[in-house]
Amino acid sequence: MRRAWTMPLLLVLCGAVAASAQAARGDAGSAAVLLVVFVLLAGVNSPLVFPKSIGAVEARRRSAADGRPVVFWRPGCTYCLRLRIRLGRHARQAHWVNIWRDPAGAAAVRAANDGNETVPTVVVAGRPHTNPDPAWVRDRLTSSG
Image (cartoon, rainbow, N blue to C red; front, side, top):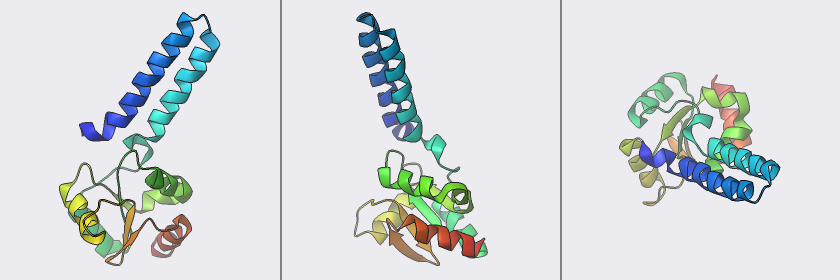
């Protein structure tokens, strides 16, 4: 749990320090803008941007029942964020597994990627795809849903 929030908390802390330095110089406007930018960066790197994660075992069970893809991801991954944003409203149709919260999910990703925790790894019909094109994933979501 702590690992998922490390980067967002560091971003907020750095933003607060940088904004304080700007405010100490008498530039309150720049300080406010700087703080807002860092808070937004923290937000998009937090687990809050992604749909609620479930465990890998449950995700596989649900995927077998409804045919929807399973997306293995981790907070702070720019490729995961790109996938999430490009999926738009369709993102909630997939089953999302945060590999930092689920050891079985991390093991599944390592098994699919020669021992590396490369994300996003999307499993469609039992077959893993590492960092697939978001349009391809969206097509799988709309055809299964």
